[in-house]
Image (spheres, rainbow, N blue to C red):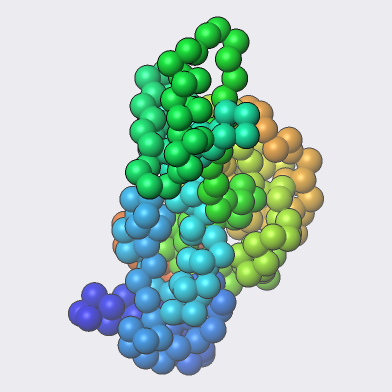
Length: 299
């Protein structure tokens, strides 16, 4: 409760610092609604990324957003990771082994180099089990069998979920000064309409997964002046503090996949709320000058 109260108070002060004259409330960074209590029934610790893929609490969000996005988006992060591991042969999964019209319920690894498959007792018709057993006892080159499994997974929702993770990293780092700009509204709308491709141009797929996640305030090339967050095989762009009016049009001209070379200032990954631009307005000015090419920063 002490940390919850501390983060609530810090966020309230950051909100007022970013919007002088605003009421002393905590503004949820996702729905932009204000709350006057840190009660667990109202506010929740937001794991960034979700705990299911190794995340830890980073900021507070309202309970409604946390619950809704957990169901709509975060579940697809875990499903995406599970699918990747299943196809690599490093994760077991349950499914059905099909040979012709005969099916046997099994569990194991199927897509890797060294696979193990075992029958799930009591789940298959005895005749089908015997037919499958005979097939493998007389297995010959060119023999064909199929493995069927199901996973509740939507690739676009996984992308949006990672976009949300990147957004929350930047909120924790830069604060309300960053997220309360009108240019950020389409990104938040994407979270609440996960099946609509509202901002597909800002989500890019890396040709190769990167060894280390990163946040960069980009100054060059000029058409990419923005903030970028690289997470595993994804690269996300967010409106910078300069040329924000043309942000979405500039990003739409980029290919979804490919190589992108940028120059700018590396920023730290936050491990707790920092809200640097709220409490240090000069830091926001420094980032704007860097993005405008008035400072020498390089990566």
